[in-house]
Image (cartoon, rainbow over all chains, first blue to last red):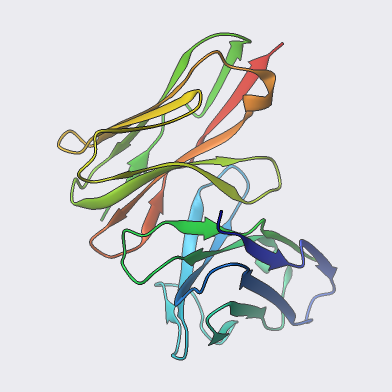
Amino acid sequence: GAVVSQHPSRVICKSGTSVKIECRSLDFQATTMFWYRQFPKQSLMLMATSNEGSKATYEQGVEKDKFLINHASLTLSTLTVTSAHPEDSSFYICSAREGVQANQPQHFGDGTRLSIL
Amino acid sequence: KQEVTQIPAALSVPEGENLVLNCSFTDSAIYNLQWFRQDPGKGLTSLLLIQSSQREQTSGRLNASLDKSSGRSTLYIAASQPGDSATYLCAVIGANSKLTFGKGITLSVRP
């Protein structure tokens, strides 16, 4: 089955540090990838849609200068949390969609637990 | 705006029991509905995907149904096992091509 690898799985760093999270589709090409954020006991909230070769589309209320997304190839998207602060601590999950149609399944990575001290 | 509701938030059952998890959504104009499993601190594992034209999907001990007109889906788990303990998330894709998730149901199966 389709596999999405997300790295790192856990990051602990000081306030003001920038953190990069990678999302790779291992056995399929993903024109579109998605980045979600999940707070404890809450649902996944879509942050942005990442399209290969073009600018990401951010959801309302998500700062694009804070959360930089790059989707340079059909198998890799990266999320960089710039100058992270404690309020950015959360669980970040990526997904990759097979195919271009909206009804195609999304496959999820294992998530990244980000803790800012 | 699509809203997905899963009630109750938590459920505890003895091993061997058959159980039903419910999901409701407000906008019936969906492409498909997915059920996911999430273990603590982990990502999501897709369990079943039902296209809007389908009524149900089955995989092993799991059966998911979809009633698009009434905005409801159920996930049936047969002969539950302690290993089924996890959070189960329901999500729909609508006309905006984005997945909208419920908050999930945390299931605990007692040995």
